[in-house]
Image (cartoon, rainbow, N blue to C red; front, side, top):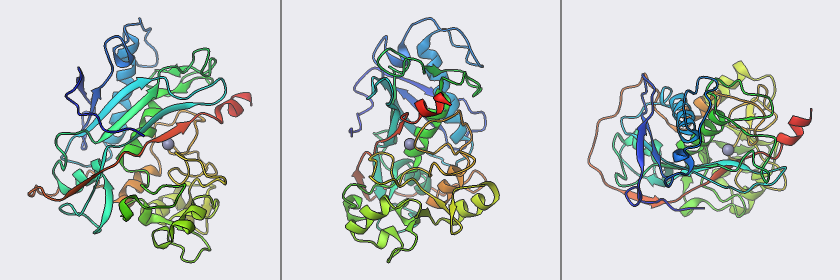
Amino acid sequence: MTRATPILVSAWLVLSATAAHATAPIVIINKDAAGQGFNDPTPFTRVGGNNATTLGQARMNAFQAAAAIWATQLQSKVEVDVDAQWASLTCSANSGVLGQAGTVAVFQNFPHAPVANTSYAGALANALAGEDLSPTSSEITATFNSALGTAACFSNNPWYYGLDGKGPSNAVDLVSIIAHELGHGLGFHSFVDVTTGAKYAGLDDAYLLNLEQFGASPSSLKDMTDAQRVQACKSEPNLLWTGSQVTAAALASLTAGLNHGLVRLYGPNPVQVGSSMNHFSTALVPSPMMRPDYVQAQHDPGLALPLMQDLGWPQPQTSPVPASPRWLIALLATALIAVALSSFRASAKQ
Ligand SMILES: [Zn+2]
């Protein structure tokens, strides 16, 4: 867990997403210190459309490419500011965390909120409200593993910095991982504590409204007791997404991963903090961007896009809502969702 860092406390560099037709502008805020992360001066050899000359710039180019994937698919008149940095995340020779991201703040009962007394991730709340509900802070925080490919962290599985998704089979496609993490920051996760079942601040959240455990009574996770929700979070294959946009898209695209007509979510037993409930099931075919582990490059959000619509994200063709006076409550929360690499070794063995 981490707290939002005020964006003026350290030297940082703002680079706007490069998407020519961005409808939800995503702004990347470089939080790394001089010589580190995005500022790493190590010479870089261009690859796969990434024409950077330093490692730091190559990382930023990949980040911009990932941001552009979402920026062209979502509608918001409010910038989505992303505090981004690189660090040595938990890792060993065979398992580790590639990246982690989450929303900085959640909001309820803001102007044009679709459902009362329900938490929305900051970027989504801003898009719906048509104004920045927390102008002094960023909407998303994201950290990526700078140690990947070193002796102590998947030494044979380095990052692939190309923008074309065509890296060697042993490499981890950075654009895919960043896009995945941004998906979490944009709202692809619940604020429920999967270990206790407790709702954040005792309130529903936009993601939670779309969850059910098939066969349970009650079936909707929002209506369950905390104890029932704990069970539901590890009830795969019965943990399902009920939102109509995902369901319609899935029926047209999936060849596996449905249960009673609804898309399965990741719900292993025992629960996996950071992964359970907040990803699609690994049973889905074709393999989605928002699965909990990395298996291949995936630059297409796929079912994550209709999921955003189920959450309430305006689509690019819809008219932006008018600005209105700012009021209301901002409850601070950071939800960090990590994408793990633990299954990579198995897939690499094949
Ligand atoms: Zn994830």
